[in-house]
Image (cartoon, rainbow, N blue to C red; front, side, top):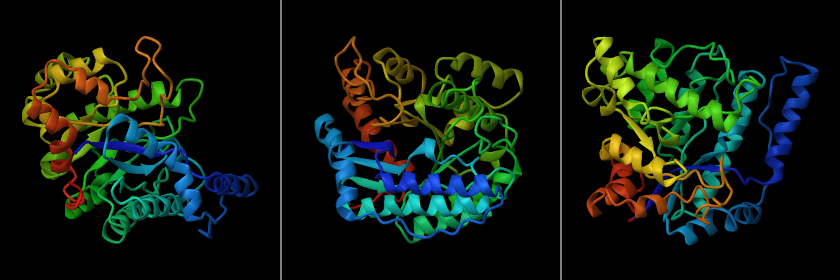
Length: 340
């Protein structure tokens, strides 16, 4: 089975976007507006239409089987509004993912967005994680390490601020993908280029220099987009660990941290496979996501990452099996057993 561990619902019906715009309109009138969840009228047929010619079509064309699916990352936008804004918005986004997993149980497995908000304790996120895993059957969540949208003024990932969430992740035995959202600190940061990749690199360094994995030895975190700059500068991080008198990376952070394959050219994938232990690599494409065009050098979509894994001459059949399926099942312990 080929499991894509990183997919976002980027093709949601227009009603979801209209709900968000209404939230923003209310906040413009009153920044302290207390959001009420309300309802969004989206039929099952509209949900089907939103994925049939997008994610499902690409699954069939590219030969992947199932996508671990979460709400649209750039729309999490935790900097918008207040705690009630984020809670109402998040619940709607997660509810739509749940409905898709019920409509297509062989194609989608749910991962939760969390109702984070700058300066707000993670208690609400812990509660929503519990709801999504225990009631909706989700297998993990996305954690935004910078709810400010690019200003990085909140606690680092090693801060005890995050510990209640880490405790819940370990209790439920589910991983989290460390994934930022929309960049509002413009013109310094572009969302899917500079912000995403910078945040991935920052997250690795914060975790590497923290005691998080000593305190939570079973915690599993995924850093997306191939780990940002980390694999390319692997010698720098190994050297820093030595200079800072930290344990070797293979004996510390790499027992708990995983990278995905959302790297959109063959040379980048080849480097990832050479540098990072195979056991720490999970197949992913983030299709219909940040980079949707066709590569003029190959004639194929940039985000058709299965082609890069297939084309790698450095992998054995068993290593491919680990990347495509085995590693993901080992990290996502709640991945549905019936999907074989």
